[in-house]
Amino acid sequence: MKSTGASGGTGTSEAAGPGTVSIVGMGPGDPGLLTLRAAAELERADTVIVSRAHCPAEILAHCRPDVEIIDSAEGDPVRLATRAAKEGRRVVRLLRGDPGLACGLAAEGGELAKAGVPFEVVPGVSAVTGVPGYAGIPLTDSEHREVRIVDASQGGVDWERFAAPDATLVITGAEGAVAEVCKGLVAAGRPDSTPAAITGLGTTTEQETVVSTLQKLASAAKGMEAPALIIVGDVVGWRDRLSWFETKALFGWRVLVPRTKEQAASLSDQLRGYGAVPDEVPTISVEPPRTPQQMDRAVKGLVTGRYEWVVFTSTNAVKAVREKFVDYGLDARAFAGLKVAAVGEQTAAALVEFGVQPDLTPSGEQSGEGLAREWPPYDEDLDPINRVLLPRADIATDVLIARLTELGWECEDVTAYRTVRAAPPPAPIREAIKGGGFDAVLFTSSSTVKNLIGIAGKPHNVTVIAVIGPQTAKTAQEYGLRVDVMAEKPSVSALAEALAEYGANRRAAQVEAGDPLRKPSQMRRGARRRR
Image (cartoon, rainbow, N blue to C red; front, side):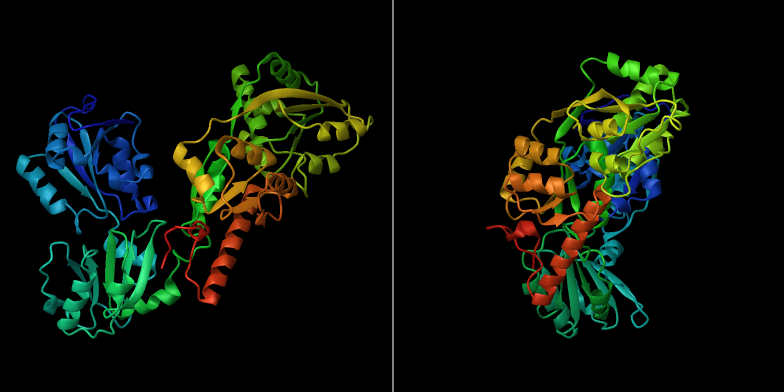
């Protein structure tokens, strides 16, 4: 992806003739609210014009790598779009929310029409509907069927026109004038006891909603971050029953996931489902073995029938063998006649994706020790070959090999990949780890404990420490960490679930005690407290 200033350019579209401009709404904040049509337009775009400061990276991830990104702060967006379109480029002008509602369609669309530039509009989820939905406030119900939208950004609103008590008001652009809005509505005839709510940073994991009345909303909303939206009317009363977003178990928690990018993907997705903000920090780097000949011989042995079993003790081992298969023009059919074992569910899933169904996975502890406890003894009448291949890391332990040898098997331990400590993360991440900026950290192995502390330092004592199993817990304690959460079974999915349960119980205890809802990171001295 190429990012340029106002004067940048990357050539012209393959399409002949003048280009077009798509005025696209990207939703109110949550990247997941981008429409399918908007995503398709971004995939086809040659040039995207957007306020970079207000555009989540996940939105721009839909673009081609060679797309030209122009920050709208660099110049007049209409002039930039017009010039790019006249160069034959397919232009996407991204606007927050819905282009036609409290946004720039009227002004920018009008200028494009005047310039004779072909354009189309891709509506988006508006903050007017999206933010109340995420706040758990329906704008209509069986008794309130009228919704009136007020843009208060320019001031000078005639509140007499919005005094009808049965109409729900949605007020945008009033973050800095909450007191004036409330006074104006009361002066116009709305009772000061009318329910009112304000939601800041709506649909994002920083969302915060305050529920009050017209009389008290201004004082209750002090410190609310923009953009914010005000809802006035009896429908605000639904929030106690319908609040679903801000009540998620890990809502707004910043969770450190110290794994490789490939390993972290499914775990991060699960954490997002609980409302968390995962931050993936690789602690190890996986590299090929220094001498590949050993792996070359092992793969040839797989094909020629040298082994009875192949044991995969990690997803990295599966990846390493798969890459060797590609080099030799092989696929999963080469495993025909072989028995395959996987150390746990994640490794088994990687094998299934490869097209190989494991014959053995441990039913209890998912580790080399757990697999060893369930391994069958060698039987010369049933097993024509007693040889087992273990493609593993260069630092793998020998517990599994020792046990298989005791059972009569001959093991060939082959270095399939090397693990080396990753480079330290950027300074802001290191500062957040040591300073309590993270609410929780998930440790998925003893090595992630050692490596994270080695490259970034020891997590702050307010940070919740969650571990995948007893061995990882022991290592964490040896490094002076307090273990708060341990998974019931050693899998990353169970670990995320255990952290979510911890977060839900913590929230319930705060509610029962009447305490303010505060994340672990807000317990450190000087942290900003949520109302």
